[in-house]
Image (tube, rainbow, N blue to C red; front, side):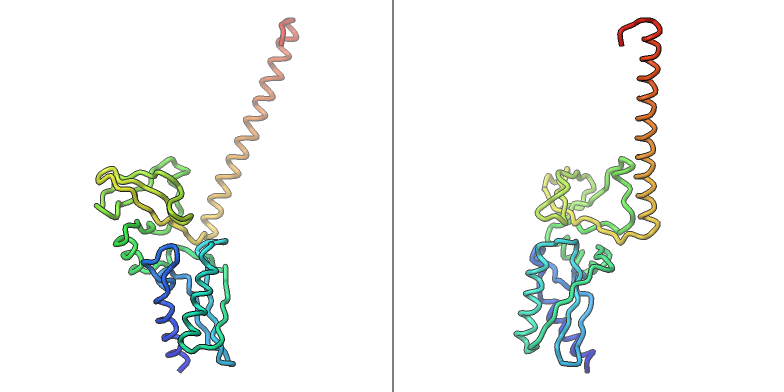
Length: 211
């Protein structure tokens, strides 16, 4: 019985559009993590924001409560969890196709994106003409979770839904290695500059040259 009620609630939640991308629902987006029927007949819906501080979350919470109460569920509780963090892996394939139909390029397969570190350009398909001849105009599009691109073939601008991945220990270690390597290099260069300045001063002093 409880399972049937949970399924019914999920169906209701699947009718709630994402405020920033109304073509997909909050279920399509993957932010609805769990629906629980409590012993006192209240409903607890657990959600995860796409990113910390997402301005749409309060509106989503209010809409969940409103929809369920309208359907007869008198007490609805919203629980927010940040662990595990939301990732674009949670987007359903249906949601990705809806994004394309809406004119938004869906996120690429989630893997650690080293393109910016290796000076490589990410290839994004234009949702209009499917061309790979595209370029990024801005890191931020109509919302913070999207970047603004332009197709060089059909000349149309479009949003790209940024790829957000769940960072594994290996990925975190990779970035830490890059950061520490950079800091080590910076420290080495600073020491070399100080050494060269000191040597120049010493040579100039011996020769009686102005420093």
